Structures are given as structure tokens and as C-alpha cells.
Length: 376
Image 1 (cartoon, rainbow, N blue to C red):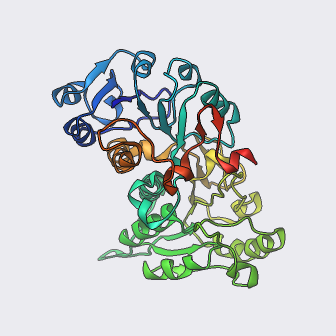
Image 2: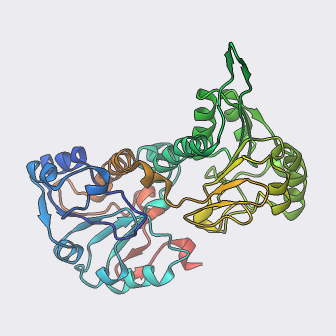
């Protein structure tokens, strides 16, 4: 099988969909690997390193996809590249298909098998292939470090001869993969940590990390999780009750990190302007959901905003890219673990269309859009 690794073109993207370890494994398995020149530079993987492992260094993305059986990417190929791929080839990446139906249609028109990595089912057998979890884990960790760097005080309690420094109070809103790692990191750094989530299962997970759980635990809360483990869209009534509970809590916090996302929908608004106005000067707020519209009123994508009362709102984009080497390595391992489901015994590109993981993430096949969510 001919595997092509693209160079990402987004200005905020520093990752690459392969690492030296995975390239070595692909070549050892008998596959040929082509990597676009300088594709790994921002993740500190050099062309020389890849070349020494036996990979072919290709000048540009268009040349790389031309003869490839399978194209690996972080964010999918640019739509302009799809027409240059051969019919029947596979393309893998984070494609955000519900927001970009024209992209999916272009793949179908070109006869490309498009696999959206964000649609990999969250089942036990697919955990090692779950790119959302591997990338969110690093994003949650980094969010606490960034907040600590901007916050002008100490995070842990410090007892000195000159007096005692009180610990910082950190509130994590959303206890998915990113939120749980943020909680663990905040605790390791010595902050007094609290967290909230609409999913009942999160309460025990938060407590297991040593943080206090904050939520309105009514009947709607008890049914607020999908079979796939994602948060459901909550009613306006519940959101109002939750807002009332958290408003007074937020006003006492030094750092707030919001992580709430709902698949296929805009991010829910969790922090209003009034709540921001209640926070202390010098407080820091990190919005990890900014790419889906944000959880914080007034957040600016890609920037830091300071409110009139001195609260700093961090709206950085693409948090995994802020740790490009590690995030690339994990992403690449996720793809390597998925590859056997796309490969026949003789090593040829042959997706196992009967496998539930492939069925869960496949968007197109034989010139048609096949994913149920898109057909709806």
C-alpha cells in the first residue's frame, strides 16, 4: 500500500499525522510511505529523520496524493487536492463534516473513501484509535499551564517566613477528557480545584481526582448522557438552574477553564458577561471550546481579551498544536492502530466495511455519502 502524509496548511496547525515510530512500522510492514517536505518541521520531526527510515520526501501535497492508496492528515486534505487523488483511495483526518457538507460531497464525487476520525465510535475496542481523546488530553493539560503562566499569583499554598500564600482556586467546567486532565493537572500544581459537568458519570470521576463536584442534580441531570458517553443538549430550564448555581461559585474563582462541547452543535454558553463582571481583577479564564463558538461571552478566537474589570479571557486556537511533538506522536499512533482495519492480509488497501469502527467513521464509499448523520 502507498501511504501519503500531508503537510498541514492551516496557520494554527503544527502537527503531522505521522511520527518516526509509525513511519518505521509502516515500512517494516511492507508499505511505501511518502511525506511532504517539511511536513513535520513544526513538530520537530525532520525530513532527514523520515528519509533515514526509508520514507520518500515529496515536494508538495498535490504530488503526494496523486498515486497514494491512503492519505493520512490531521485536518483532511484541502478540497482542491481531492480531484488529484485516484478514485477508490482513502483519506483520513478530522473533517468536521457537518459544518462542511461540500467537502464530503467533493470526496463522494471523486470516488474517495473519506474517514472522519472524530466519528470513531467511543467503544472499548476503539480506545487506542480515539484521536479526540488523545488530543483533548493534552489540551486539558496545556490549558492549566497557560492559565498558570498568565495568572499573576502562586497556584499552591506556600508557607514562608514572610507569611502564607493562599492557594489558587480553579474551576473546570466540563469533565470530559480535556476537563479531567485539567483537573488532574490543577490538583498536581496544588490548586483548590472544583468542577462541573451535566453528565452524572462525571461526578465520580471528578471525585476520584480529588476535586469537588458542582452541579444541579435533578432528574434531567440523571439522564444527560448519550449511549456514546457524550453530553446531551440540556433544556433552557436546566441551563438556567445551573447558571444560578455556578454564578456565585465563579465569582470566587481565580482561574476558570471551560471545555463544554456537544458533537455537531455550537458550544453552549456557560460564562456570561455578568458572570465575568463578578470575577476578581487578575482572574484568568480559558475557553477550550472557542473553535465551536466558545463557552464564554466575549471570547475572541486566537487572542487574549482583558475585560474592563481586569479578567483575562484566553481564546487560543488548536491547543494540541501548542504541544505539537507529543500530540503528533499520539495522533500518529491512533492512526497506526486503525490501519489494520483498512488493510488486507496481503498489505493492500482494503477497508473492512463490515467492521463497526469503519462503519462509524466512513463518510463516503463508491461515489456516495454513506454516513447516517450526513444522510439525515
